Image (tube, rainbow, N blue to C red; front, side):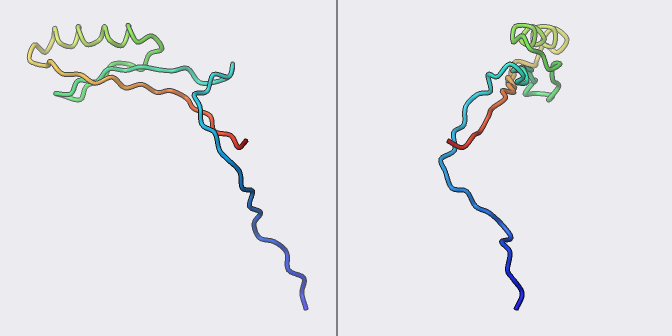
Length: 80
């Protein structure tokens, strides 16, 4: 008879999820996207810089009035 070895180990616990504010965390980034033509600003760390793109875009495309903000925020998950 051969000895059986475990194929997986399960650890049960409660997971926590929170924004990553560790010193080595990726930065929160912002971009603005035109909802009319889908053109998008560069991805930037300052939301005001991303928002300024909308004025330049609207100046070139006077009928484009709707925009969406795209925020990328790093998160961390850990088991307590």
